[in-house]
Length: 178
Image (tube, rainbow, N blue to C red; front, side, top):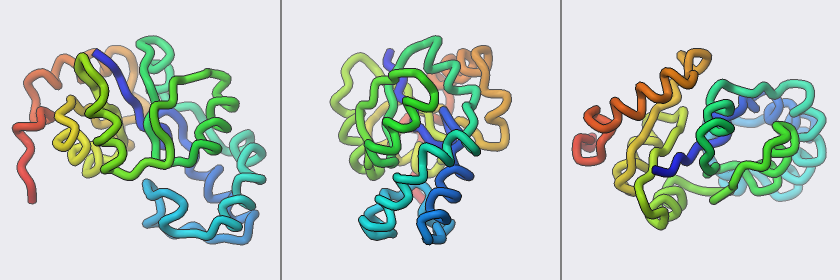
């Protein structure tokens, strides 16, 4: 079984750091930009200015989330819509060289990457709608790292979620569209 984690909102809370870095770059980040690749909503110049400020803002505002300890303990990979540069900066901030299997990914990109992994995948994401779409498309198990309960996402709960994923509605064939 291979564990694959989304990065922002699952392993690390970067919301304030990203917003502050864009603000310092003179850009107001729209709420609907979360989970999108930067190319879908801002210019290269604005993104480059944000990246220049991002390490400082990570140090000021980012915080490790409980699922990061799960990644350290169980191992696994990271698959994110954040840019490769941002993912590498997060690696430096966390001081942990996680295996990055994809960055700058759309939902379809994530499905494509997960389909290439053999031996079973458990995908962990904080976005229920995207996580379910990825689970359905990639035919993998999905654990929802619920933002409202992320503080309780510990080793015990992770094991419970894995066990529950064998019989829960998080199986691809149980998901209905609509």
